[in-house]
Image 1: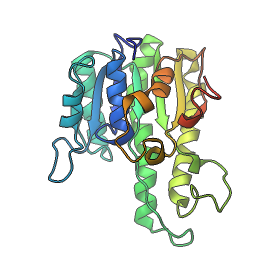
Image 2: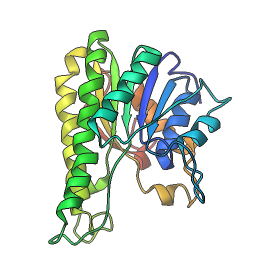
Image 3: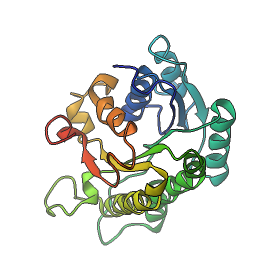
Image 4: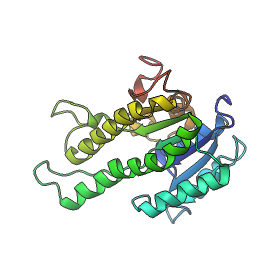
Amino acid sequence: MDASLAGKVALVVGASRGVGRAYALGLAAAGAQVVAVARRVMPVEGRTTSLKEVMEAGRGHGPPILGLGADVSRKEDVQRVVDEALAHFGRIDILLYNAMAAGLSDALEVPDEHWERVLTMNVKVPYSFIQRVAPQMMARRSGAIILMSSKTSLAVPHDDPGHKGLLAYGTSKAGLNRIATYFSEELKPYNIAVNVLSPGMVRELAGGKTPTPEQFAPPVLYLARQTAETMTGQWRNTTDYGVNWP
């Protein structure tokens, strides 16, 4: 990967495993100063995924990754990680929100606590991050916000496997899409790009292995380089990258 993002600071929320890990490592390899945020800081028995592992994996591939442990469902933790990132680097140029909550349930019997969890993590928390990160982007008239969505947010056939049992999840991701389109217009005068990316069927694309930066990061790096003039308010799918876009 090239160093096209050298000098930029990227805040990656949900960075300890899966595609979030791949995004954090890919951004670092492209020269960005990465602040990786996740709940798990240290590995636990039987599971190696943690911020510590991401920080170690990033050594030698770009600027050191700063790991911040947080429960972002708590507003005070959202404020803390933004404050710490700004105190450490002085700015946040890229916000990538990859944290989420999901779960299967019958469409007519979605528990109240399930609704609360997915709406909090997939709608309220990304809004809180934008609320706290955007002002300093606006002051510099520059920035890129990338929100991770899903095809379940779209109108898909009822028998599609991406639809079954995911009413609450799909509804929350549709709300996330709307946050992106709203803020793409709200922040356009400040040259801030706001776009949405669906990671696709990660398990299938990764062949059952750990998602790699080489495979999953290029679409994110492309979106991270955008401005309000070049691309904003768009929904894109990882599987279409290099085919239908850019």
